[in-house]
Length: 270
Image (cartoon, rainbow, N blue to C red):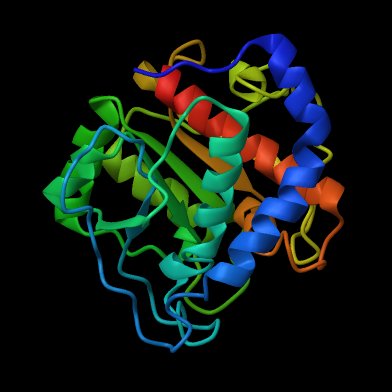
C-alpha cells in the first residue's frame, strides 16, 4: 500500500513542477544514455526479484513489417528507457510513491512475469501483431486488475502500421465484449493527482486533429475501473523523453508529466 500527499502539499508541488521537469530531467538526460540506439532489439528483461516498490513495465511485442522505421529500432522500444526514467523521477518527487529507479522492466506479453506488474505500457500499437498466446495472457492480466497504457496511437499512415483499426481489432480478440469509449476531462483519472480540465494539451506536430483519450472499462461499464487507457492522436511519452532537450516548451512537457502521474496514481488506487 502507499499514500499520496495532501492537497495543500500538492498545490505547492504543482507550482514547482516546471522547475522539476527542467532540473531533474536534465540531470537524468546527462546521466543515462539512450538504451537500444544501436539498432539491435532490446531484450525482454523482467526484474529478478520483487521488493515491494512500484516498477514500470514496458510491453515487448512482435511488429508488422515496417515497425523498425525509426533508428532501425522496433516500434515497441521507441523512447526506451529515457521516457519512463524521466516520468518515474517526477513521480518520485511529487508523490509519496517510491518507484524502482534502477531499471525498467521489459516484458513480453505472453510472459508469466507480466502478472508481477500492476501497470504496463505499450507504444505504437498500430504495428502490433497479436499472437494467440498473447490474447489469453493479456485478457487474464486485465481482468485480474492490470492497467495498460497505450501511447502514440493514431490512424495508420505508414507501411505496416494498421493504426487505430489494428488496435481495435486486437482488443476485440482480447476482450470481445468491450469497447473503447472516448473520455471527457471530468473523468476521475484526470483528477487523481493533478487537475486536468482540458484536452487542448500535448499536441504533436505529426498528428492530425486534437488529442483524444479513450478507455476500455471493466465490465464495459463507463462507471467502472479503467483497464486500458489510450492516448490517441498524440505521443505523450515523446514529451517525457525529450523534456530536457528544449525541443518543446517546458509548459507542454509539464502537461505530459501531469497526465503520466495521474495515470499511475489512478492505476495504483483502483
